[in-house]
Image 1 (cartoon, rainbow, N blue to C red):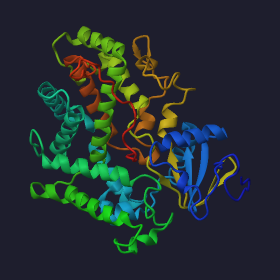
Image 2 (cartoon, rainbow, N blue to C red):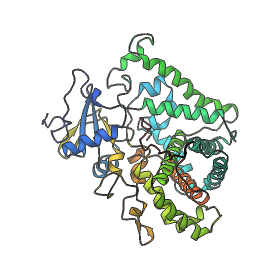
Image 3 (cartoon, rainbow, N blue to C red):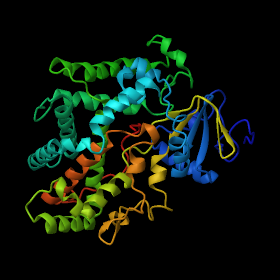
Image 4 (cartoon, rainbow, N blue to C red):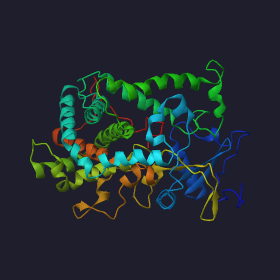
Length: 438
């Protein structure tokens, strides 16, 4: 274990045996990385841990204190993005401003997006969001079993309407299928260490020049296939419109679908919360009516459910890596230039010092005297990224989630399915995504 002041000290250094040449690269799991990072953090009794991924330093932050100190207070240092050959050069995500390095180009993209989707401006989309939710309610009446498919259609239709003015088909819409495939591939390719060519400096970027038939270069074949999907997302809609689509809206679609799926799971596992929420809705708007955004202040328990959904099974359990280009010092320890710095969102939103019984679904943790308790940390502060890299589309995403949750509670009783023999089908509560979205 290193204790040198010229590098990360023993307090920050992950106690894992390094493999020759690749360091801890093989220790990074392909699934549930956030849980592994959290275990290592607890074992070291430190909210900062360090991994050596073939010579590249990966720093994982597991507290809001550390994230606030670095991503917020030192945001000019910690807002960079590492150049990602697998995503940008091989797959074609070069147009996407979340992957653009911190600088004038990124600031220009960010400014334009913020003007259209800040807290005030995002309210202009409430009518479209409400209409999309009403349509998904009708879809559930026709097909109550395709839960995630219905949610994907809802969010895809909303994005295509707002960004392009395109009205999608009722089913099997090619645009929605295209976006779903692109986001799935992006998620898989974003796992730190998933591909040896993932960055320009860590692991072995020169492999991008090796022929795709060469043994061990399966990533090149994947990249070629995935690049085709990415270019379709960027170019195909221009056959019908010249307006550009912000990538954050695509990312927001993925997050919204995941959050709504989590909401359904939460209601299946916690029927008492569903009963309380439905009672609140019925008392405010009356049985048989659907809520709208004007009802939100009068439905605090519904709002608490949305917050708990974002916390309990947060849709982006590990944040996309930030990149630092200069040496820095924090708490007396050196963070070397070229490090990837990652916020462990899952650890923060399951901090038992902040959220008692963090693995339990308890909307009431956000309430006090029948109102939202502002003294409890809002999960939105961590659920959509950190610092200057926080998702600017978060206001639209949370609004879409809220109106969908409120409307589904008003319209349906969410119950576990029963098989042909009358046995209750127990849902799975495991994360299905292995990638990084935010």
